Image 1 (cartoon, one colour):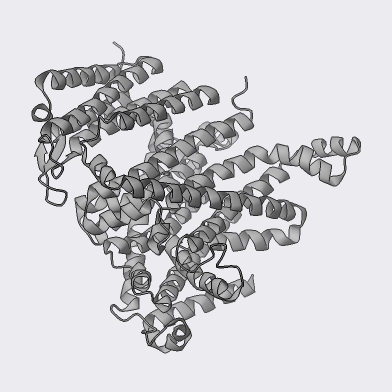
Image 2: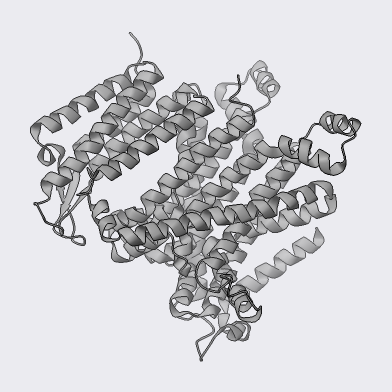
Length: 243
Length: 382
């Protein structure tokens, strides 16, 4: 475990250093270039692109998760029970929409840039959280619910103090999936001119410069792996705390 | 008094908004902004009245709490009329012989279609059909869609205009798309099942394999494609014969490898879970009958783990069909080509030409394999 923590810190440090001062790493990427191509992407600062990337994904994932949790709570209460079968079908079919298609179809309504990427992220981030919250809330041990009812808890108290805490690890797992998908979708967002790290990869693909592709891909992959790892630790901590 | 159906209320609201919004958008050519045309102006009076009547009937059925069968019939009748109407509107608005103007479905059409399809899928979900009838319904729906496209009733719609201009490329790219999605699925299954068997026997490998595959999963698709370009180009240049079998730094090869890598996690994890869940009694009985380890694996354990493996296959296939659109970015072809071309030209119709078949393919695979999983796990048996 200690080795894992060390490795994580080292990766984080390397990532931060690279994003802040990419020129220092020119020697790493120079072997990938041909015919005097630049080794480091300089059209836009990598740090700005990375911060944009993280900001878009963080905002979309938090809004999407909040909406998804609220919807899942709604359809598992008696008020919204009519919508349960339909919402399951929508979540199931919704996941068959490729993120690229959602992205491209949002362009005519919102124009090029960050807005369509944000909407695609939001819609796409909803589904995993919704499904997991639904699974968490509908598979609660029956005796726990009965005990809560017997102890005189109101409907609200039961939801907030019993049901949601028990479903929390699954919900966090859903948020993690949604976050990972979001980081990937934001990367593809550069095809519709969103200002994210995907821009670096796209520049590499267009100019046939392998160095750009590799540095963009490494930066995005590290961000995705580090943030997913962090949420996995939260999940483990929640499960651990429960027992 | 019977209470109003809540889902029906939602569906009717969406449908009412759809009626208020423009039914089609008319454009002088494929790039200029469209002129919105409302439903009454887009269709002859009798057809608009017929469509309106069927929509009202569907709304009444949706609001009243009636059986799923009636709800399905009502929504399907309205969907069929809507499909005919949009084709007719396009034909009537296009001057005869003109190939430049574009008539695209407007926001109103999409909302009406959404409302009716929501109503239909709600009815199907409440009906709780067994797997075989579900497969039958899927076949009928696919057949109806195919017949509609083949009949030429939609030929004047803007998406079909784009198709007519690119019919050859379309089928080639659709073929590439399917080959990439199915080929990488097959390769992933062939790799993952042995790895899963190995991991379920050797506890030492379990964590390493699962952690590595989980890490792969977190790498965004375009980044992974990019990262694979370099090693694939190196392989093609250095290993004799590698280039001859299609390994290359550009084109579909890095995409296929990436899809295989993405597909491994669900397949390996489910193979392991399926094998772990084999009841000890089944294994004891097999040993008691004098089966060898290999016989036990092939005749007892794998058949029992099959539903879990099939469930993972469904996840990977749907995921592959979606991800295969991104392969177009690295020059690998597939339906994503149209999506990216269309996004680049702000030609929505072209985006739809790529996106709509992808969504339909993914939805068909999801529904068909869901039914297969239910059959395999015995849920469909009475």
